Length: 351
Ligand code: NAD
Image (cartoon, rainbow, N blue to C red):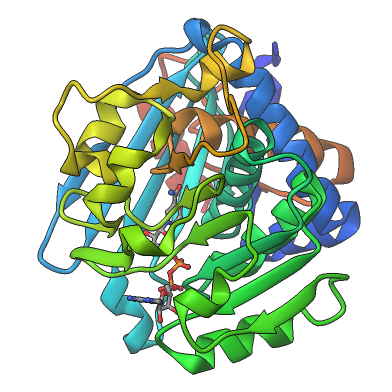
């Protein structure tokens, strides 16, 4: 990417409204597939990226995080929060926005809402991991935790892995009713379930996406049979996990970026040298994904900066293509770059 100075004066901004228009224009399933393809493309060039665990600021009620990365041409970061108690206050548990910048000039080239985009990229990432790890021809997925992320997960697994039935369970029956309503007409068979055990009946894939700031036990060891793939989305913070430790000891564990996952993921419950496989190496063929039908595979998802970078890169291209953006007057642009002060003074005189 190389933009002329005049093109850098305004920063394209994708609002929530434009993000929704863009998704409907392209089609939800296609967006999920194309974000997954973009993530896979970027994971296959993993070594080109500047990588660092996200920078987290914790409080008693949640966390606020910054997630930066760069491939040398573009720099991106996401601001994201995680506040499990927000939902009871009528607020989102997770909200986000993000920015892409040109490395050459340091100028931003995109500012975007990322609350919807995070749900899309998290679902795309989960399904992409499952494409490499789940048993062959999975049809049924159990989904425990039916909040904001859940329907996105269901659509992504239908599109990318061929899931045809989802079995939903949540401690709050209203969440399951909401997800069941939202998935009507999706082409999926949707089965509301009264317990996690019921949701897991006949499932080849189990997704956990609950929100609680504690070491929770959404799945106990006896609930997990041989051969399943677990997509653990909700444990993504120190002191916030979903799986009993014994499951981890029986599973082959796949992660995004070990230095971050060791602190934030399910594996915070294990010794620091417990073996894990990095997903990018599975995608490049350097490591094996699923080896046999009885193996339990676990994607210990926490969300890594490169996934957001890929999602922003995708949205940048699509927003330019479709025009679903606004130009923000965000960068001061005096005619003489050294005359910033003069520009400020002249603006008052003109007014
Ligand atoms: P949400 O608050 O909208 O939904 C969470 C749901 O979990 C609620 O419906 C709640 O009733 C349910 N729940 C809580 N405890 C439960 C339990 N013990 N058993 C069954 N259900 C339970 O949250 P969300 O936006 O859907 O996010 C879900 C989780 O995913 C959060 O923990 C969030 O931090 C995490 N997340 C992870 C990633 C990632 O990349 N891994 C990305 C986004 C969100």
